[in-house]
Image 1: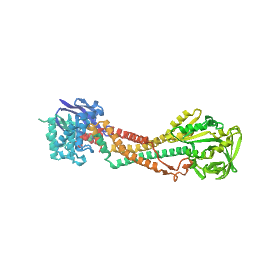
Image 2: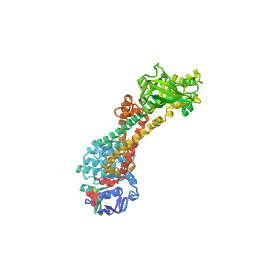
Image 3: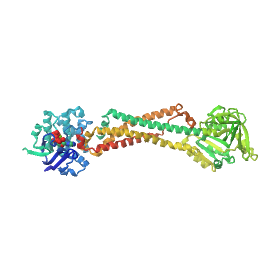
Image 4: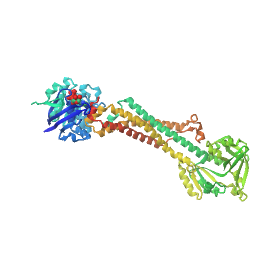
Amino acid sequence: MKVITTKGVVKIYNPDKIPVKALNGVDLEIEEGEFTAIVGPSGSGKTTLLNVIGGLDRPDEGDVEVGGHDIDAMSDNDLIDFRKQHIGFVFQAYNLIPVLTARENVEFVMLLQNRPKKERHERAEELLRAVGLDDKMDKRPSELSGGQQQRVAVARALAPKPDFILADEPTANLDSKSTANLLDIMARLNEEEKITFVFSTHDQRVIDRARRVVTLVDGKVATDEVRG
Amino acid sequence: MIQTMAWRNIWRSTTRSLVVIGAIAVGIWAALSLTGFATGMVKSYVNNAVQNIVSHIQVHQPDFLDENEVKYNIPDAGGVEQAIRAEPGVKAVSVRSVVKGMISSSQGARGVSIKGVEPEEEARVNALDENIVEGDYLSGEGRNPILVSDELAKKLNVKVRSKVVLNFQDRGGSITAAAFRVAGVFDTGNKPFDLSHVYVRRSDLNNLLSSAADSALAVGLLAHEIAIMVDDIRKVDTIASSLSAGLPGLEVQTYRQISPDLELYEGQIKNISLIYLTVIMLALVFGIINTMLMAVLERIKELGMLMAIGMNKLRVFLMIVLESVLLGLVAMPVGLLLGYITIDYVGKNGIDMSMYAKGLESFGMSSVIYFELAPIVYLQVAVGVFLTAVLASIYPALKAIRLKPVEALRTI
Ligand SMILES: Nc1ncnc2c1ncn2[C@@H]1O[C@H](COP(=O)(O)OP(=O)(O)OP(=O)(O)O)[C@@H](O)[C@H]1O
Ligand SMILES: [Mg+2]
């Protein structure tokens, strides 16, 4: 079943001054449960595409449908709720809530969803243990290394069991051991919980683990390779 | 967790938050102290006026109030006095006979109201005996003693033991003149009053007022005004209406009715506190807006991220409002306590204003002001600060929710 569809998506930045066509007609269909890497040179539009899929940014042309919803038809606040219910985000730069501990960060979205306390605690501990941060649960982001923060961010995205995880270079700042760890977790969740993963990356080790690799060049899909 | 976040957020810039908290606390303290000061001034003015001049309640024959003529005396003054003394809550009663006349010395003459009083009774109702600055109170034995104020003494160029002449119409309508000797000089602090009033013994005045037609017994009981002090100023209205019901045909007035300026001032106390509160809160609004705006602008990226991961605009808005309210709530007990301590201390010990305001006394106030504050003002201030904090956070909070997550995330 197709869960993400983009048709002729165009995104132009600075339309009035020096226009930049960050996306220039992207057609993409992603099936439920896929584990897809979006690759391409810097500036090719990877971040923009993920933002458009996640409803953080609105396309100038074309249609985006995610989980059966027409993104363009939703208000900003509807989009926030939609993300809360269905999408886990991992950003290119660590984006944890600085005043909350690792555990509280992971619980945060579940809290927004009004999940019961017990479930939140158990889930947060389970995930933090899974990303190897058993001993850092009560540390604030400023007390964690870059890699540790990124792992907390992934745990936070996974915690509410979203339908999709959109991750923008989730391993960009990780050493190879952490990268392997994170990929294991992602692959396991993908299989066990049928979460659809779309992530952008430059990292060959990540590309190797992907089951589908979409290459963007100049805001267009250049190649689209599905592996067995 | 939003509460936790808001609470921790305000301590991210400890110094900045402490500065606003300090400003709010000082604002609360200032609002309370200024109101306490103003209330103290008004109360001092009212108390002085009540004690020196008007007393709590006065009883007259209604026509006397309009015409001010000797013939409108209180009928059966002795019986009326008994009835008044029997009223619960009445502390002191002074029966006076009053006539308009002229006082003259070799140096000049002035129109005055001559009050004939029973010295002992009058001293219980009026601080007149304490206000004697030279000479003695009326208690002395000499013939026809009179008390004049220092202001009037200056105008007439008389001093203690000087002779003055009083002219007025007696009950028969003929003009009477009588010589009095200045026994003492008083000063109530209220210049207009002092210039226009003199005190003599009631028996002396009554003798002069009687015409040939009056019997000796009736003369002794002649009275135009009964001044009353009650034991608790808050009961004035109840006691006055009870007296009024028991004394048909007589006009019973409280100090507010006798001297409407007192009512005006007392009524202003409420407005004063609201005005101070408003002015100070207005000043605080800008301080809080500024702080909260800074707090929002330096967190654009984080706020964008919060909205990206599913924190809706209402929650973001509430978080910002809550941060502002928390600043106010931290400041509140500090400010209220400082204010309370100040009011309590100055309320007991008073603050001597004579260094700053020499003229206070000529306005009928004492130079030592005791702060006083109605308990409700603490509540008003607390509510005011709360509303201010909410109000001041609205603009920054709107700013926060107008951010577009993706743009916010891209800002470094
Ligand atoms: N807010 C913006 N204003 C103007 N131009 C923008 C903006 N955001 C992105 N761009 C431009 O759009 C193009 C695509 O940017 P995008 O961030 O999607 O690329 P990317 O593939 O994620 O790059 P990288 O690998 O470096 O993260 C780039 O040329 C970028 O400069
Ligand atoms: Mg990017």
